[in-house]
Image (cartoon, rainbow, N blue to C red; front, top):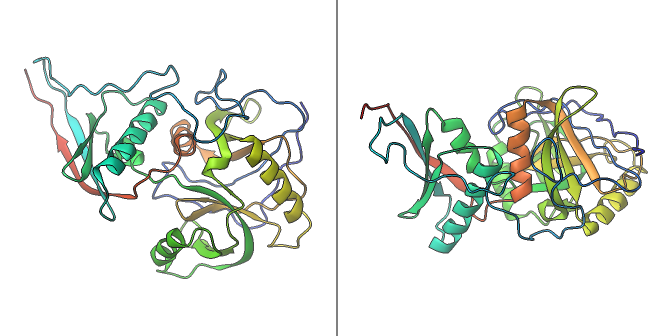
Length: 313
């Protein structure tokens, strides 16, 4: 199966250390020509949802085998109770009980795709409470990330404006159908990007999975676009390939932060793209889970973290 030439970034890579467990050092987009095998399963092997499946279609709750994560509280059978962690999320703005239940259901799907066991997720008193055995704060916190994905053409790039990123994110979340300015995820060398309206969004992606590259031995996230998303992606990359830098760059945006902005040299067809960089297996699975199950219907913040030590029965 032939592959198009990978798009190579013309700007320094950026990272998002607050949200992912590994730094994203580089994002590379690659496209597939001709017929391709299905690549939307959530494990490193096997098959899953096809590229032609429409966004929003039914997907199994739980891990790759379709099983739901267990919701039994630790030690409920009276045996020795292990230590466990509880993370409570509050909505940034008041939300209905129905919206919170939808968010909790999606968090359960994410827990299954990440291979988390003994996870309990409940809606209580206007909050969402999660708990799992052991010191699981990092894993539980990841379940509450918004996970909104967008691909936006770049207009200009400039050094980051210190202290303005949170304000820019809030403004962008209210104007996601318009041109926005966003920070690159990172620290001293982060950049500010002026971006056009999104050409593709999360609903244009049919599936995502963490995958170990067989040649380079590194972890990456493979995306499969829907049939409509494939056409959009080919069209916009063909247009960008004719532009001068930095307007030939395509920003990959997650939760109103630019992961990276690779340049495009030709139209990318075939309905496939890959995000690669300094991923661990865990961080690749985390990002794939966010993309696979889509954005939460509620923007959440961590309101409390409680750790309970092990007890003898």
